[in-house]
Amino acid sequence: MLYKVRDEITKDYDVIIIGSGLGGMTAANILGRHGHSVLLLESHNKLGGFATWFFRDDRNHVFDISLHGFPVGMIKTCRKYWNKEIADSIIQLKDVRFVNPQFNVQTDFTKEHYTQVMVEKFGVAKETVDAFFSFLGQMNFFDNSQMTNGELFEKFFPGRNDVTRFLMEPITYANGSTLEDPAITYGIVFSNFMSKGVYTFKGGTDYLIGKMKDELLKNNVDIKLQAKVEKINIQNGKATGVTLNGKVIRAKAVLSNGNIKSTVLNLTGEEHFPKEFVEKTKAIRLNSSSCQVYMGLKEGATIPYIGELVFTSQYPTYDPARLLDLKVSSRTFSVYYPKESRPQVENARVAIVSSTNCHYDDWKKLTPEEYEAEKSLMIEETIKGLEAFIPDIRDQLEVVEAATPLTVERYTLHPKGTSFGTKFEGLEVSMNLHKTLPGLFHAGSVGIIMSGWLGAANYGAIQANAIESYLGTGA
Image 1 (cartoon, rainbow, N blue to C red):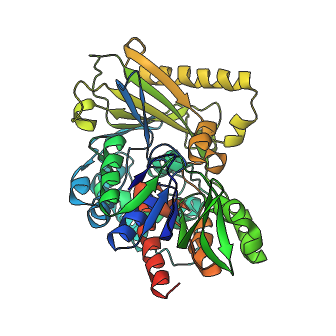
Image 2 (image 1 turned 90 degrees about the vertical axis):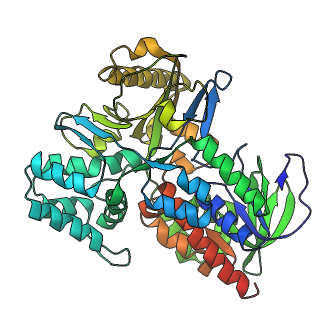
């Protein structure tokens, strides 16, 4: 059932899930489908976590926050853990563009086309390209390799900043990964994307989350929105439920879909963990944050086709630090053409979302006046950047808004507004949480492997299986 805001919860559950990102929802759906009593609690007024959207101008404009794009594996994941209707709505992006001072490339983001471009445009020997992709395919998460991304690219493409940019820049745009991060994180994620391209959901995030909510309710998952959990309750060294609005709700297991550091240090409390585990948790680094500019076109306005996902930069070389700078000169444009993105909506408007990476602290330290000035400048620079592709775009726009890391933090409760959770080391703490404190599990974004739409959903499935094993022991 879907609880109303004022409804009192009067029963116990097998599992309580805190947060309804794709990881939390997927775990809830699996556990509910398998007959467990599940309560899904969400602090916001709608499901989805960072997979979300918002409307403007009496719903004439709708903006997706994080829809473009994910690997082909999402089709299998949705078919297995959700339903065929959701899986069948996943479609491939046909045209991904890179426009910067070093090259201008259009690609479908498949291994075959990437190989062709690297050989024909960048002049790399095919044997080297094949060896590189073979090396990526053989990388194993369980290998204890200390190789960094920078060392990986130097091994195969020494001195080729342009090749590194072609291969690495999409990942840096996505979550702020740098050349110092472990190569395994790049290898696994890029191998996923490179297999058969980049995909998105036809119909928009609101349509998808609506279908997921229907499936959750069909599988008897109880849902309560605007329900901010105050703490995770621990008794005799085990998680026993949560406190919500001063009321204790009991459960045999608790799954947090929030940030791992917040889960351990705030919601639970470090006094319930060994000192070494707390120190590891405190040492986890957060990923960088994001800024977005949302642009909605006037009724009837059209634009020339410029591609569906455009990575553009004015910076002369690939430099991850510059991609995170407050005075950014690089951004990604996600273009939502109505017929492709929202065919179910009559007279849907064109929407364009610009995304940039940034540091939370750069925005947090600003005075209110400086903050508004920087937002206005970001909007102006974004429109100027878009004018390079659509010269008359300024006259076509009806709605323009911007979001910063502070916006993300406000709505998602993620520390420092990070949209991709933690760096790689967060995964070890997350996976060992229930081994350290029985009954307490985690499925939030930890490391690039368990982030993004596919990683989040799959991590929810992994943790659902772990919870079922725990419940099977009579916990």
